[in-house]
Image (tube, rainbow, N blue to C red):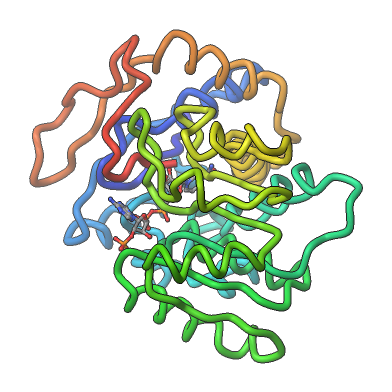
Length: 314
Ligand code: NAP
């Protein structure tokens, strides 16, 4: 029996996870197939229930379902409970376990960018979606004392602050309105800037004008395609402490692979597949559009690694 792992999201066609995970299964001789399931929220509960079947090793969950999936699994790990978001589901018998491997993936990126220097204590985070929750959880865990969230829709950032209320009681976690003067004032006081929005996927697009970036700032952009966003280009001109989203993608994916298979992830193989995908485009994986859609719709097409700014999944 060929085992199955699925990515559940809406949309899913531009995700790099399928290529990366399939390459890892193939390299280790694991008889498993990575599938792309495009599901609307109304079909999510049925899709999750299907994962209890014996042929499933588990799933990835992406935009916009990471938070909606929380009540649909049987148990949450600490990182998933802390963030209130699930990006990986594994199975223990018939039980479904919800994980958040984005937290560990981001921690690896933060460690890499800070290097041997002392870990800073003050961060600005742009965005308030599922990825931002993983970032904030990791920053709180690292002992940050002040984290300021800016989001296009302020109420979502305020909801994120409320979510972390208890775990952030000892520090200053706050949402601020995204006005350039407010952002500039906050950036002048911070050491770490994280872009956890989708802004920067399109060429030239950036969430922060170059002139607002102070020198000596660590900048992490969660976007992994393009590998060097306009924000990172602008930041690099003044410093070399910048990092794109690929290390986080690899880190969260390696952890997911281990949860599904119980085997160490072949990280070099996964990295090589990401390099190949960036250079030559995504391998074609058919997209299962689910009950309401057209089954077998076309997935990612060779040579189209790019996508639209609106919500490309991890
Ligand atoms: P999400 O839950 O859909 O949240 C999207 C975020 O982007 C929200 O804060 C949203 O603001 C903001 N946004 C979208 N379009 C915008 C625009 N035109 N102007 C201003 N803000 C805008 O998605 P997510 O899962 O958090 O992912 C966010 C980003 O992180 C994506 O680029 C994703 O690819 C990346 N990511 C990378 C990794 C990795 O491993 N490297 C992992 C996860 C995510 P509103 O709330 O105001 O709509």
